[in-house]
Length: 164
Image 1 (cartoon, rainbow, N blue to C red):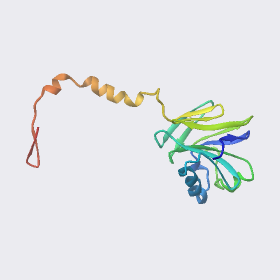
Image 2 (cartoon, rainbow, N blue to C red):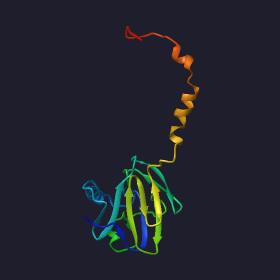
Image 3 (cartoon, rainbow, N blue to C red):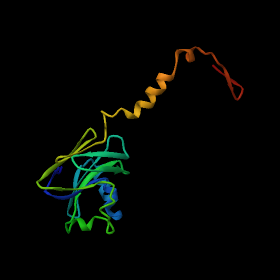
Image 4 (cartoon, helix red, strand yellow):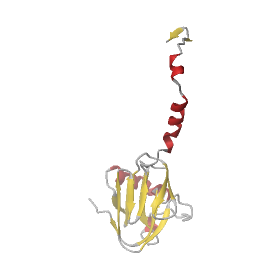
């Protein structure tokens, strides 16, 4: 199994489906589905792991930006090398990748533990345990529901069958 250490340099962090050449995407996915987080394709070391809840937009801490995810994964790949030109989309617009571009001044480690991605000093939390905003509608609904509503006895019909 390959280590998750990467050399200093300029990297894309985000959903690799936005930057990897379409002809190579299935090869990238095959490595991921084998359970490998770090792998090499055409001389390019990459990291890729699954997010906690699949697709979505995830805030980046340690750099300005958001990772938009459509493949259920986030990863990193070095940019600006001869090898990277062999795997990246030829018409790649770096200003519109759905991720961020970061220059690491020193070597770094990439990892994902329970939906928390770390790339050196950059983190992307795809689990968002501290964010209960998604449950606010449930709390609001529960607060508006009264015990009196529960006491109502009603019956109805569904194709002639009685509903109790």
